[in-house]
Amino acid sequence: MSPFETYWATCERTIYGHNYDSLLRIYREAGLDRAPDVGLPLEHVALELELMYYLVASSTRQPEYLCLQEKLFQEHIGKWADGYSRCLEENAKLENYKATARLLQEFADSERAFFEESKFCE
Image (cartoon, rainbow, N blue to C red; front, side, top):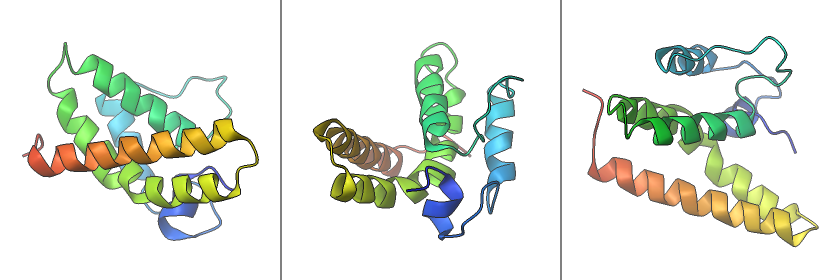
């Protein structure tokens, strides 16, 4: 199971695909850049979720990060989370992974509802 956005958002068997420039812009707008020793592509699902965590935590001090959160969810995480979590839950052998899949789905559902109610990007 490929843990990359492009695979789950487009079914392309590649990385750095369809929307990579948008993701890179979000990282840079948040003042982040790729660490030289990080081997994972930025579109790895774990790194995208870690970026969302950073934006959520930072938005209490920097409200403009709410717009970056919205962009990250609408343009990226929201496009792959449902399919990825469904596949993970259906195919996981360990209950920990099944629980992680359910947690990811709950997160995606709550973010989707939040950004349907509130718009932060103009």
